[in-house]
Length: 318
Ligand SMILES: Cc1ncc(COP(=O)(O)O)c(C=O)c1O
Image (tube, rainbow, N blue to C red; front, side, top):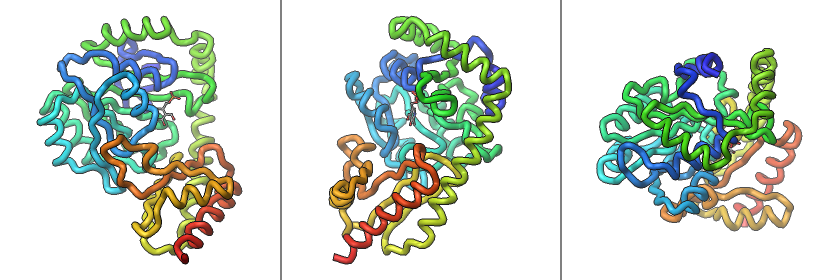
């Protein structure tokens, strides 16, 4: 595992790596356990991964939001929140953000890590799908951390097999005991059978081959999306298509209400997840929706997009 992580520029030692039952379990434990900074609340990007928010609220923790959009986050706002609020950790998805599809620049990552150090705030870096990264110059926040503030999480469920619930978290020494106690009480240990299967997959070189394959596949899917959207000229619509990834985020102009669009598409048996699914109660004003392409083949993506955009056009012309 230590060698595996070093290939992703996460340099650590074996004792600092904990295997969890999916990265979701790592997130759940971190949300619940006390942190050495003695602070209470969790800061999340808005929008962000839905289950992280649902789980945190369900567990009775207070969430604070900071807006993230196609251009990143307002670092001055981040500094203000770090300074004024009691933030235990900042949960961030630096690359292939769910749901935006965007990634932070290296400069932004360095700045975020610097602020965490300055204000004694931890960062939980959810690098859930680093495996599809093709830009070798894109480094994790963990790489820039010199003050032991970044906790790094990688999912194996996404790459290996969604049914096999495996994630891994890299913890600094001062967090290990507390995490271990919580993990033990959660499920004693992660399925050894699943871990054994993953070990064989990695050691035999199959994992690397598989990663190359999925990198190609997701690259193709995003190219398909990009090509399709290039030819859709609907005034006021904004979107960003990353080189690779799972998601894109489409922002509608104010005259096209995303909830109305969702209702109209539902009548055509197309379900879209609108912005409110990814936002906490304080940030409900986003007129956007997510397109996820992970389960679809290129032809299905084209076909689905065609119907969605025909409906947007029909709505706009009324
Ligand atoms: C951003 C993000 N983090 C974590 C997870 C959970 O991953 P796992 O299947 O490893 O629990 C997901 C699942 O979709 C996700 O989108």
